[in-house]
Image (cartoon, rainbow, N blue to C red; front, side, top):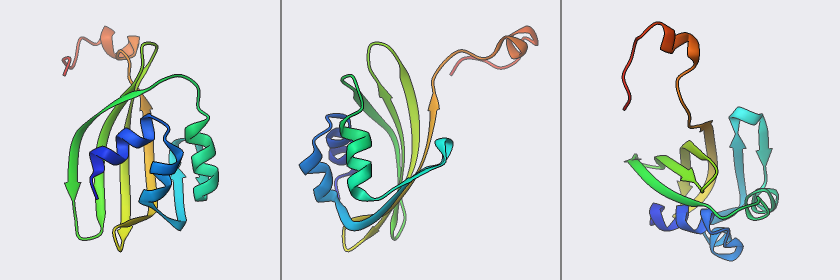
Length: 119
């Protein structure tokens, strides 16, 4: 499975291409918002999401049956990072556990402590 092509299909909201990566019984979980989707619901949530998006897959880790990605997903208005644990069986996605965070500045209370540095 070409994980960068998968992410490109996701951000371009190509429903048919995305579907081809998944097993029909796949389970997708977005832990930050406490949501679990079947494939059809995931396709609705992803492909009907407003705006045009781009992505940069920043890190990929392969195990025997899981691909872990760190991906920046962004447009002209916002930027997010997703950490995705993508479980495969027979080269199809059977489960995704994903954690999303909005990119931004450190909070004022940490800035006031004058700690840390920009990445």
